[in-house]
Length: 360
Image (cartoon, rainbow, N blue to C red):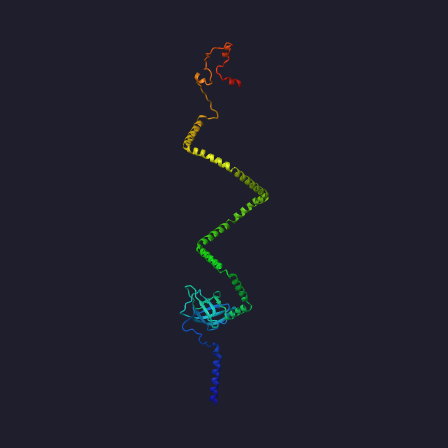
């Protein structure tokens, strides 16, 4: 009896010891949540982890490369620790996203690989700005319910009916417009370089104008008084323009009236111009001679006056240009009986010079 009691007491002590230091069911690993082989751990910080559970798959390009080891809340954010196969290399600029593998399937962690040559190591972390959460099925159903019940589907139907009414019978015009738009877009696409150069030139012009902003402001301030003066003299400017308009009408009437005479004058000047052109070779020589004479005159006449002395040699025959007797020649005709001697004495030596006497 005593021996049985001792055995029972020993069993109770062992049971108590095991109960105090043993593990519970929560500490037991979940089936299918582990990763076979060597692994390394990477953390990811999400603003919202949805219903992500421990043991969820971690996939890269649709291939499972690990599992979610734990999900913890820290500073109002969800910290997810992932267990990744050591053979999988993830670039350090990659991103992660929580999404469902099917609409009603399991929530997984999708890794979107980056392009960096450096890879994540054990203990690295995806910051919150490189983590996203896809819309859940509940969100999609709620949005669909809102659209159907209180949305704009009815208005979309009205819009479709109005478009059908507008396009009915105008299909060829719409096709032509679409062809023109397509042609325009093709030409614009072919002229991308020209458009780019134009935009670059406009940018350079804008930079130059921005750098000369003070000069432009000063010019505008200086133009201000001139603008005020023009504003004050607006009536005078309008009157001047009106007078110019009247002058233009008068000139037009004169031109119409003088059209035929002017044409006749021009036609008459044509032969004169032709004659002048025919003697241009001679005119050039004559003009050269005049230039030479002018140069000699400048040398010969140093002042405004030129003293001249001329000797005139005349004989009796050269002086008989008035139709009378030669100088010193007497008339051989017999004098008249009634005083011919007096008549001969009264006849002038140079007949015709009495004209000069009459004008004295």
